[in-house]
Image (cartoon, rainbow, N blue to C red; front, top):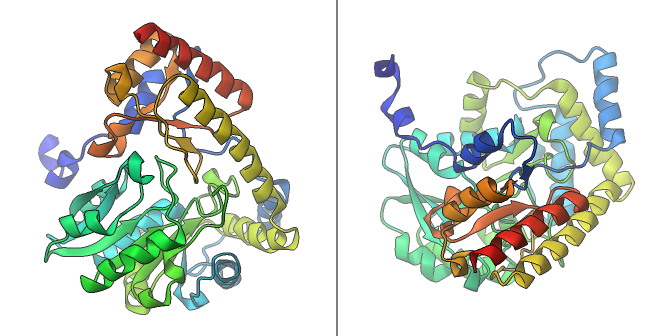
Length: 389
């Protein structure tokens, strides 16, 4: 049967994250810091809206674009929270942000197009680019620069075949962000080379010490940014599968056609739940989002301090819910460190190489877990590091 599998599918490497999930699966003794999922339950007012929608018999398809009221609410939310202006007719509701990433790339990539991806970054960007016939091109980032994208590193990898830049900030796995001035610095490069920007802002609400700066808020880039967002992280709605994409007219039309043939629409009751997340969330000052952010910040500071006390170099993450310590000083690569940590201390983390070659000396640890779990895991990691010396 292998002859029926496409060459592109055959060439895909298995997810580096999934490898460690599989190794830990079925072991009750394992403490996992690998999953990028909020440990909070979806707030009750959101769950109640979904339940009410089901009780009311809302079990049909919606428009391919999604509920008009939800699209309008998303446009207003983006404007109020992040100074981003998209018309509701340029918003499509997707099956999570993951589908939005896939749609945006399939809508713009032709065979041989080069797509720039900051490295390290979320595991799915490169494989999706490859599946569309494009060529993923890594743009190196480093802890010394706060894992920011720099104009110099961008210029080094741009060629006549470069078509778009994936802009994943706040970043998974590093927790890096791009403050306003740093975004401004790369805009001339984007304009000089006539690039499209695909901005994945799923962690926009989870920044610490300041408000997220959206690249879509800069007027110089009007008409060349696709903004991707969703409800999974900030509203603890991973299983509801509701995301969205906002795009310029022609790209939007292409994305919508692909969406029509694939997912058709996100679940209607999930869309009503997402509508409640925004409408009632706005009414209560997004209190549940703020509470989660404060708790994540507490855990962030705990994890950062713990790794530094172990003697590991650890960049201070300013967004998302991950820390990305460097383990080079132990003499191990991230892969070796994670493999031995799981085997010897029953703690699962993700090797940084899963997110790109420039992450090979790092491990990713999620702090979307209870403080008790984090303290136990950190204690075992500290023991492991001490035993390596």
